[in-house]
Amino acid sequence: MEIIIIDTGMANVGSVSNMIRYLGFQCTVSNDINLIKNADKLILPGVGSFDEGMLALKNSHLLDCLIEEVITNRKPILGICLGMQLMTKGSEEGKIPGLGWFDAETKKFDSTYLGQKRIVPHMGWNSVKASKHLELFDGFENSSKFYFVHSYYVDAYNSSEILCTTEYGEKFVSGLNKDNIFGVQFHPEKSHRYGMNLLKSFIELEC
Image (cartoon, rainbow, N blue to C red; front, side):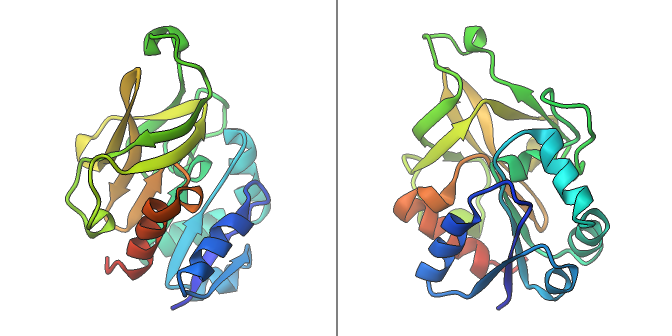
């Protein structure tokens, strides 16, 4: 099993790789196109602004490679935080189009809309409710909690692509899925046993 954590220089890839190795799997942090082409599973983490994330992929010459591997060859990929947002059509945070793998856009939290004096960024532990019965959430309860740090959320226009939701003043989409493409807004690598279970399920998932 070859697992590549895509290195865009915009995420704490060490936390993700440490968690995967703790689970007993081998992984490599890289932006090498040949390694990505030979991988069985891909993970795209990210922290920071949307445009910087897209430029990082472009400057690393990864866009065409990812489209070929994920869309044409249907290689499983998991986007984490900004990594999932990059899979949408675009973001209110920037002007550069996203990958467009999901029929969704990334929008900024409105603290007035959230009500109850909710603080932005949304930071800390929160429950995740699965919207799909996938192996990715086998053994999970709707009280399972994951760690979030974000000021932007995903607005999904196709309900069939919603993987899970979370309540923070109002309900928002905290995960997306379409075929071999998965994305989560939370950080499984920082979410203890629930995060370990999710990463393990993704690695062992047969798409």
